[in-house]
Image 1: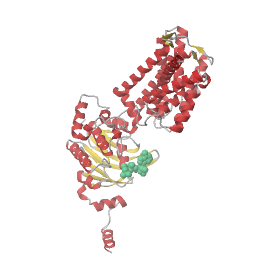
Image 2: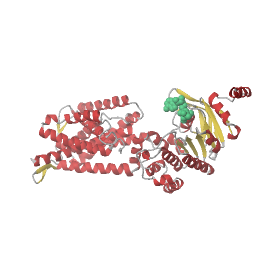
Image 3: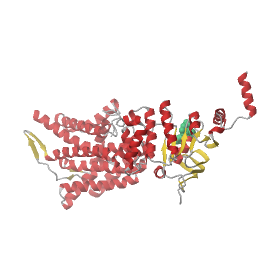
Image 4: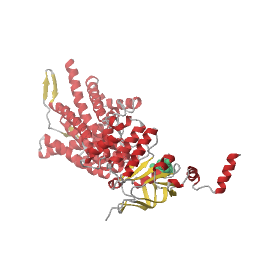
Amino acid sequence: MMTIFLEQILNGISTGAVYAIVAVGMTMIFGVLRAINFAHGEYYMLGTFGGWFVISTIGLPYPAAVIVGVVVTMAIAYVIGRFVMQRMIGMPEEGSVVATLGIALILQNTVILVFGGGYKFFSAGYIEPVFFGDIGIAQQRLLIIALCIAVFVGLELLVTYSRMGKAMRAVSQNVEACAVVGIDVRTVVLSTFVLGTGLAAFSGILTAPVNVSVYGGMGEIITFKTLPIIVMGGLGNVRGTLVAAMILGIAESFVAGNFGLQYRDSVGFVTLILMLLWRPHGLFSARARF
Amino acid sequence: MVADNTLSIRDLRAGYASLDILNGVTLDIPQGQFVALMGPNGAGKSTLLKTIFGMTQHKGGNIGWNGGDIAGKTSRHVLGQGISYVPQGRCNFPLMTVQENLEMAAYTIRDAGVKSDRDYVYDLFPALKTRRSTLAGNMSGGEQQLLEVAMAVLQRPKLLLVDEPSVGLSPAAIGVVFKELIRLQKEGLSILLVEQNTRKAMEVADRAVILRLGEVIWDGRPADISHDELGDLFLTGRMRTEHETSRHKETLSV
Ligand SMILES: Nc1ncnc2c1ncn2[C@@H]1O[C@H](COP(=O)(O)OP(=O)(O)OP(=O)(O)O)[C@@H](O)[C@H]1O
Ligand SMILES: [Mg+2]
């Protein structure tokens, strides 16, 4: 009984880690653009597809496939960032909703056109279990947890010490003050967007060995799980996102384990509805941004 | 070519989208001059400062500076040309500490002098030094205003545009800010100050410029205009005639 409970927690944390990596990108993009990127899950999908493609065609080893998936996604994001996201600076919300939903449709359907609509099988990564006493967990899941910690430590260092990271915080706090001190908001928005989508892609390829199936529409559900997380975490709040992602990951793991897998995906939606009713500014103080 | 640090605004027209706010402003600010820009609410004072700093829609005319025309250029370009701007109201990074805000102020300056400049600013404003690890947004309005002036000083400008720095400040803090502005002027900086506190402005400025409905309606030495005349200019856009003044006195004495 205890073993099952602990396994559920561990699996929940690793699912939470996947969500955290994808969601932190979306929340940072929101921070600098004040816009929800409704195509965020599609970058997760692109990364996964990129990894799957180089593994299944030229047999690249998994770590190299991770890099290819992330880099290709960031390159695509750079182009989209230049032509679409930069134009969203200072634009009313309706514009960004329509624009990012449009991008989601284009990316999704382009991938389906090129690779077909069927499910692909992702066979790579480290799926053998390791045991701690009776508790078994796939190596890949431990890897995900470790990399999630690395990502958040890295982001914390980035926004605290680097010039670009500080500029990202500055843009998220006061755009007018940025003009006054000479920060180029357009460049900061583009960099944040490319970084955030790169993290989404990273998250996608990291989970692929565990999730196994790869398909064009896989990003949608990720976008809609990311939404409750970034709302719970407080839009634009990096640390809050980590906590919220863990809460959702663990909650999903319990619901799947104790009530049935079919209820798992509803946890996020219920959370979103409750959050919007109860604390639309998130679990944490609205001031604790990144 | 010798850099000419006179700001020469010629027939400047600017506004927001389709809205015209400045309707042909002409104004020269020679190097080292302290100019007080005054006028009723909505006259376009802030818009003029924003336009010089490249934050509005430029619709015509030019702004000569450093041998070039900066009208319609981006804020970053203008800042790079040695013009700094302290906007009206709060304009800092509220979730960064005072120290981080001062670091951000020197964002475009990448040399070793930045740190000593910051120490210098701390000496100038000891109030900021004691609060260096406080989040800017958690400080009082007056402290934040001081911070914003300090941020502009760190940019080593040749011309400083300051919009209503005294709002919300205690008399003591106003004293500090104005003393600092005068000191900066003595170092050769030109200052264009918008100030509602006309008495204070006339006291420190070399020159007063009055803007009304987007046009300069008076330009001269503060000594050449009385406070009553200033009030009339604000309200009606012109000085009272002798006749009106005597009638006004009659009304008052009845
Ligand atoms: N961002 C903006 N968009 C549209 N109109 C604006 C904007 N900012 C100011 N205005 C308009 O421009 C006009 C001049 O405003 P401005 O702020 O320059 O006046 P001001 O002289 O600084 O007044 P105050 O003394 O109240 O600060 C006003 O009618 C104002 O409504
Ligand atoms: Mg104003």
